[in-house]
Length: 448
Ligand code: UDX
Image (tube, rainbow, N blue to C red; front, side):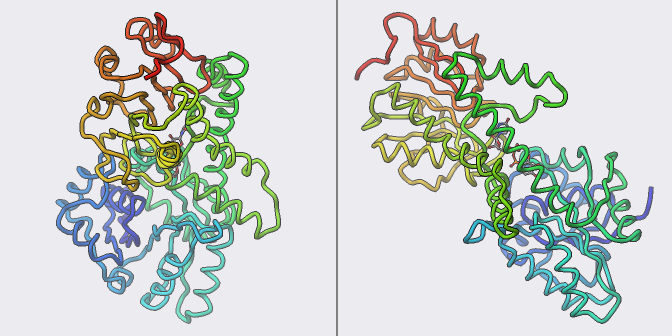
């Protein structure tokens, strides 16, 4: 069983909330702190400032059990806890580096308020050396038994974060002492994963290197997708064949319009700028980033090729978020695609099951998928939402002005689409797979 730990989770973004709630569910007593009174008010009244699969239910349950509470009062939270877990964001700095201001502001408050020497766990993604630096600084300002800093990265996927918390492939903990190790062991006592203890610098790099490697897999398969287009191979078939080799693994080989989200783009940039700082070149990562940056243009080129021009063409964008099962639009590829289409004079209409507010005003949002599609010259799929699997192709075909579908995520089975193209006269264009032309005389789309 083990004993329960008094934990303060600092920062109630998606990592902080998932971590706090899941730790409370494991039996620990958790106080979540945030400087935003607005967020704390929402949480205190039983609401959630963000959507994450399964979090709502779990939070309600832990609130009922009295194991979690919310406050803006750093002082009392710090003083009543044995373990402090920092989950503040490390956003893009002006030069691409991680902005550590929010983190240091927390560290200064911890130094100010903390009486005894608790453990300070940094969950935020931080440049290599940050945890060492923070501990050194704390030692210079503190006379009492000193705080030990632990680096304990998270590998939570948005939309699957609660599941990932309880079923991680590994728990990484960079720490110095036996005491720190036992705190980590207590904290995660209910999770049946290997705890990999290591030094803090390595732990910090494990997080960046893991994200960079996954992003590299995506850019690799996208590079091969482009090559498949030249050579007539099919990238989904290629990826499946590669993935059968356990050394390669089948995940993160889904070709498409590239990666987005709050982690990969930011963390790769931060890693590159760390490289500059240490005067060390990271060429694989530079290629990863530049391949990804080309994806929106590549997709728009397909659209231009199919329609001849985008001027005054009505385009239906299906899916806007950076991936399904999230409402997050941060670094979503749809943003870059929309901007490019607008530059070409397109008239953009969109459907996304979760998005009610879009930062680009020219994009007209529709609650109904078929309304977005109505009279469109092309459909462009940008997020592989489950809902899109139910598309009624007959109806789609009736609604479209020009029957062009561009599947930026390869979400539809290529063989199935042969049939759709035949029966519904739709030209189906995907990424790294041969174009399936509509039957009848529609080899090239109708001039309008
Ligand atoms: C990622 C990491 O997976 C997670 O471990 C880390 O903690 C945070 O960053 P997340 O950003 O939630 O998680 O999304 P993820 O599911 O990894 O997808 C990232 C992006 O890559 C999405 O835009 C997705 O569409 C894209 N992607 C993913 C591909 O284009 N192809 C793939 O094969 C996999």
